[in-house]
Amino acid sequence: MGGPQAIGGGQLTVGITANGSLDLEIRIPRPPKECRAVAHSVLLEVRVANHSPTAIEHALLNLRFPASHGLTICDRHGGPLDEGGLISATGGDPPLDCWALDNVSIGGRSDRLFHFFVRVNEPGAYPLKLQVESADLRDRPIFDGWLQVGRAEGERSPEEAISALIDQGVAIAGQTADVVSGSELHREAGGFVLSALVTVLELERPDLRKRLDDAPIDHTGPKTGDDYLRALVRSRVGALYEIRNRLG
Image (cartoon, rainbow, N blue to C red; front, side):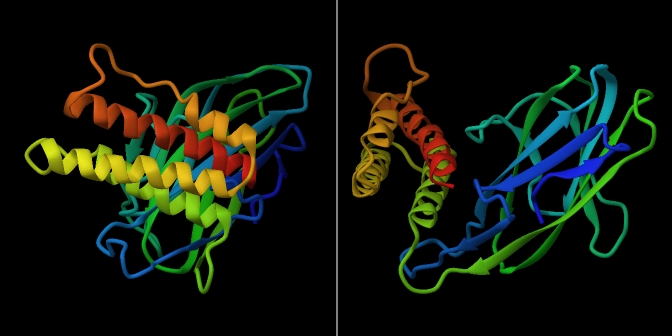
């Protein structure tokens, strides 16, 4: 369940989506050509809404997810952020890692978005727990939900096709120079960029094509070399995250 839940005596509502899915149900595709050693990425978006006219200050927000799935905070494009920290699991069944954020403020009658990244490689039900603590809340609210992961069968949905491309791009951009560089990196990056373009064109949505084409590239200097190629791939990955959310 990922829909809004009232917590904190009705002061707060929290909603969680997974790869744009409001019901926290996703499918992971595994065609033979994909690398089975790399788990699929999941972008969790947490929306915390404060319905009280009074701001909530200095709150502690804890998100828990099963251990060993790479739980980390990120931006809406999956990029890492230097906020909070991971508390490794110490027990439980299943043991849950915790990402802790302190000094969180939520203005009166407003909301905030937080994004987290995890990887999953098997179908199943993965527990999600969110806890918000603050002296401004009447109790210590807890959100309980489940990420439902199924195996994709048959033809991919557009969202699943985008998800597979995101995984491919993240893997390419994350490879260091001693793993892949030069002509091999050029081939992998070029193939990814072309596949992303073809997939988005098949959606027949000019607005999404424009979002892909206009994706900013975090690179200075000539548009050549390994650093530029990795920046190009990261820019397309960021656009694909946004496109997937729009589809969801």
